[in-house]
Image 1: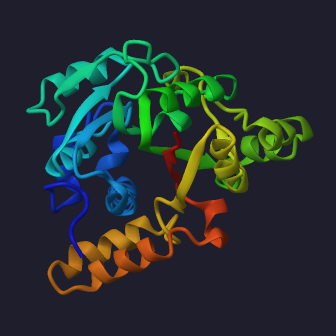
Image 2 (image 1 turned 90 degrees about the vertical axis):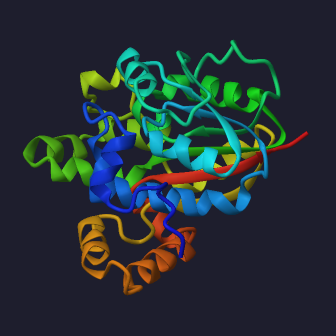
Image 3 (image 1 turned 180 degrees about the vertical axis):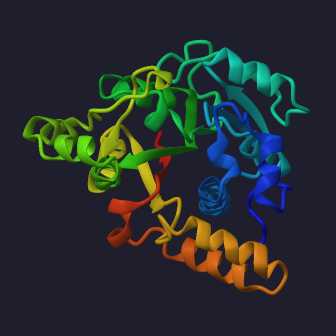
Length: 278
């Protein structure tokens, strides 16, 4: 199987593509596997040519990977530090600009062949902003063009509450908190560095949400396959195995089973891919 995470062949090398200040996760086993599986799921559906809008993914590896497939990339990063970091790289992106996923007014309708939000809906977009951000992404994507969006699944968020010990358990046992999570995806804990935005979704609602807005579902999958929580063990196979084939076989299996509905509730992230209809 092809190494889908760009030119790098070692997780430590992802540092070359990412801002270590804000995106250590892409240098970690968790982030490496996420990028690898996301790219593998996307690749069969990419156009042969066209423009890509990469919305706040925070990973130069995605831009580089798109360019290697003859696509022209615009990176939109609302954070000035991330923009400065990206502009200081030998970036694969044709343009690095300031734009918020909720306001893409600088671009006309039907501009991009591919629009990706591989981060904003679990780092920057709150429940109140979800519809506006989705409408803007659809607007700037041409008919037949591809949307790719990642989300945090609801049950992973509930599990994370329990991992926070006593304070998390108190929240998980609070009917008001659980009601907010179940009804509109509002997360009760927020890191100030996230700008106040966190959102979770119940997997079965994702495809219908986009389909009601004129998007044809291509796939809904787990960016970690069934290996959520086992990323360190999978990475150990990669480091030990090198060219012996076991790691490639494991990743192939994770990709092939990534869309199994039975694993989506505890996916590391959910990846939705769809096509904008005429």
